[in-house]
Image (cartoon, rainbow, N blue to C red; front, side):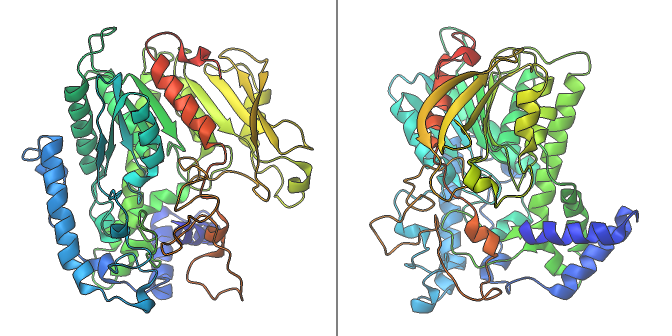
Length: 502
């Protein structure tokens, strides 16, 4: 969405107070004339028939059905795409070239598919929901850690994902919500009732778009429209609010159906070299995320009209104070502020405010930190992971319980890596030793590594935007995030999870 957002911002400045129709037309003409950044390839145009949709929910009733359909889907992907794509040195970084450095088929397990990690006498189940354009690989490490702690884990592949970017042209919100319900039902059938509540203890952990999908299901369960009610929610970089430019995605999707305007279906077209994430993005995907976030925010606001929402599943949120993809402030304004003070918590990763870094950053790039730390008492607990001082790269946690203004400090034995100014939207779920996005390349140099791409030359030479190469892809504080997430699930139902010691 990077290219689309930049164009939309310029169009907003040019349009002034013009109506939305005029603005959409201006953006459409601009995109049509400029054309996609890269030419469309087979994986941008192919149609895969064996994908799950909400309309198929009557025939795909169980997770086993879903897996069998998924097997047929990936066989179709091999036949329609991989069999038609060349091989050789010129395809070394092409995801859809069999045997290339970027080919996900070189890795086992196949992390583009749904994965299940069973447990003997499970203490609960955890449904892992990845973000838009991502894959179950997002929660590879987190899923393995939860399974080691005794949880039955299901990493669910969302429809339209893990195959080809063209899948995002037809994906709908209804497809995703139907898949989520199927995943919850499967876990509930595997773990049995929790003795404390009589209900299956199914926790949901969602990243980016996966977070509002988790909230959407929780709201349905809260209203008696779905069962079981989640035992807890853990939301990572949640897409609760988007840029106003996201509202243009729906109109652009409709315009793309007109003859000659097909290119408007794509807001970003880039080479596909990431084995587990699409680099290209469709207007339809943006429109579905916009639908989802508006719906969730609206339902929460409606539920809070007569007062804070009580009895909502214990919710833990991990967020970077600066996030170029979603609105960090919306997590507070559209979610946490509306929940009754019953143990919910926000863990906020601050900027690296070491004095040597502040000289190269824009003024006050993370205003949410100051607002929450200096503002009035909050109905949720707040933990800020921040520098211990302006002269140190070491970090501490500053925790304010709900309805308190006095933070308590605790050392974390962690520090900002040299040269890292902040976390990013895409960094939080991945540990520093991740073989694809981590701090350093793995021992196997034959596979692609995207954690730190150090290339230099003249500007304008690369098809990939330079700011994408600068974006941090792993979380140096992942061990803290994983520990807090596991503690949250372990303590949900026993006592106030907000009181867990760090």
